[in-house]
Image 1: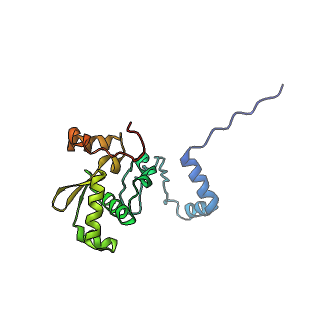
Image 2: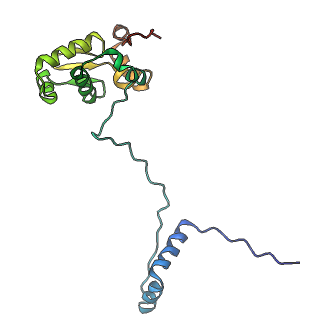
Image 3: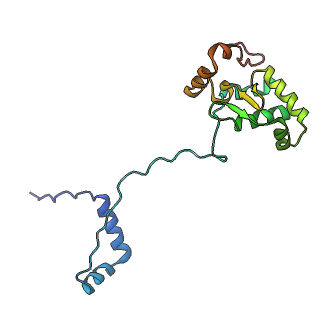
Length: 178
């Protein structure tokens, strides 16, 4: 009959770190202790999981655009400037989907004239992507800016008003409304 050897215990994270230090430093720690018997140290291992970091983006913020609209944006046949106006307004919209600024400033950003920006906004308004709320303030449609059916979209739509938003539905050209 053979005797069985006792099972090996798993090392704790602190033991693993200690053994790792011993491997790196060799017997330097032992020599240090022998030279200075009163000198000691305590190894404290941080075994907590690191906190999750928030997702980062190039500009530090993001807009969760509705996938169905984004996949079919080409069907609206927006010009390059109209699309640039929409993208800039969406990117700079606040938590409620409001874009604040002037058409003149947007024209400078897009390197075009104010008339081009004004015409683009009129076209985007006709398609219900953006509309004027007050002088220098435009609402970016929450369905576009935050994604249809998301909790955040629902909160913004509730703030704006469901009856008003029923008039601002974005209909994809050539597609039947769901």
